[in-house]
Length: 210
Image (cartoon, rainbow, N blue to C red):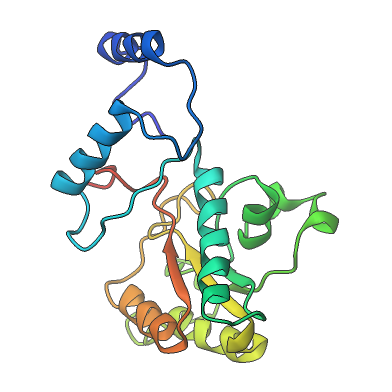
């Protein structure tokens, strides 16, 4: 799911071997020539112009874990000590670390680890084919997105640090694509409550959806 240029590519192996001959291991915050070059490529060719900060991680689980910590740190920096919860979605997969399992909604991956997981709230997935709310789009007014507001009200906005979701649900839902009006509603709700919106694009980023 992450090999979007294929496997066994000799040019990739040659580049990796050349990099290993210069440096075998670097801690995540260390700057290396390759990382600096990649940052510039991302800034110039991929990222929106207003995004100037880049961090690299070894896996999707690690990246989402860092995003969860960042959401908490953001709220702490604003003096909101009670904001620690990160809302996830049902039928979602965000990683296999304890924090990402707690936020994610993939039941079989969570099974057996429940005693170790923080009790994080979940909003319904955007699943138009089998709507968990029994509604039909477009007459539903994206009720699944509106339900995020209900979750925030139930938990208390003063306890919520972030909302973590895949733009398109991948392994736990088989490509659940939301209607165009879903994400604008989600974004408005998060902005209004000053909750960080975390887009888990591990499976859908870097052109994988075209």
